[in-house]
Image (cartoon, rainbow, N blue to C red; front, side, top):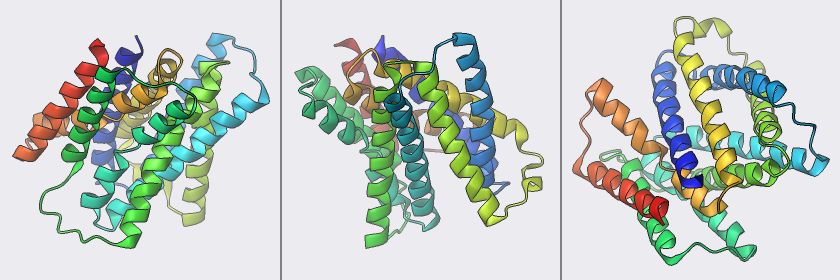
Length: 276
């Protein structure tokens, strides 16, 4: 069940990224991020109320807050790297975030089965290849490497934080993490004084981003309570497969041979993990 939930979450994350990319072509990224976070939060609050779960212990809430902060930091580092034109460096390295979860599992004495480990390596390798943009011409720099590492750590600790917080209540964990991320992103909008009117015309896309992203977070949180966090993190990192697939199907983009190979490897690795 955990692999299915994680893969479903990855596909929704990928769809949300696709819509977010379209919206960000017509409105500032920070506005799209803040508005979509808020939309997702509203849906999660409804889920939390309907669940009727009591408030969990403080340590679980703090873990969820940490997940929200880590997720925001990871996104900020990723966007900052992409804004510097360093996609060829930042995107592949940020896709190595499952290694953080693998180390966390190993520290607790939990290790994947041999076939799961092989599948994880193949899947991560596929995502790295898929994430690369041929012809970017980006040069390696200390700043780009630091941003890439921060993004990977942020995404890795996001999943780990959700896993730690979800033991008491998945609704509370997911909603608290989203509330934290929403608060941070809205604060950034206020500091940067970005006028909300620039979202006019892209709200349908923003709503889609928020809905897909929030649902994905729910699925990833539930998956983390049913399987090894290293496996969940690996499968959830396959979101670029969906993003690229939608770009090919709906925008007519033609992926390079390398991207086709990366997608095939990612899917093959995910399949190996899922059937073990």
